[in-house]
Figure 1 (cartoon, one colour):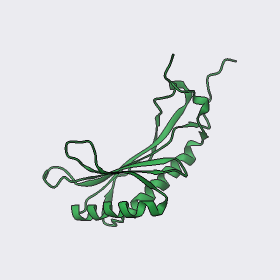
Figure 2 (cartoon, helix red, strand yellow):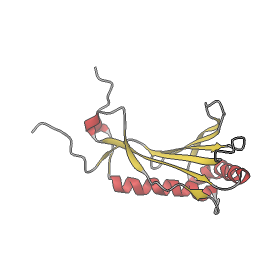
Figure 3 (spheres, rainbow, N blue to C red):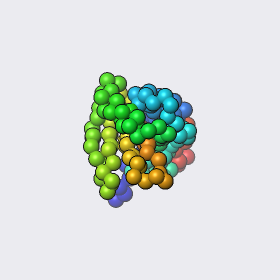
Length: 157
């Protein structure tokens, strides 16, 4: 028996509209961080396949990793604290707040936005002891799995 789930049970959504929603979710988080002088990495959201579904099922999720950097660590820390305080005011439910599982025990917030089925993994990387590295806030916003409205399933004709 295959462990893959049935792709036809997944919500159908338009990739373009999901991309816009993902950008909006990321933008809200960036606004809360509130560091006007910080630099932000550029790449926008993209899709990744959802591993629990057949490869030809067209099931994917939006994935938007980005970072805020280029300001003193104390500023990054204050931005991270603003997230802790303000995400719930923007309909995000914080489901984890504490050190991640890495040896560095990096500060991590995981939050879910249930209305549009998004999740954010946010980490504050303190690199002050490593002069060759940059301290930053690392954000990854992902959507639930969905099927692209434009995907044509391979059904027998």
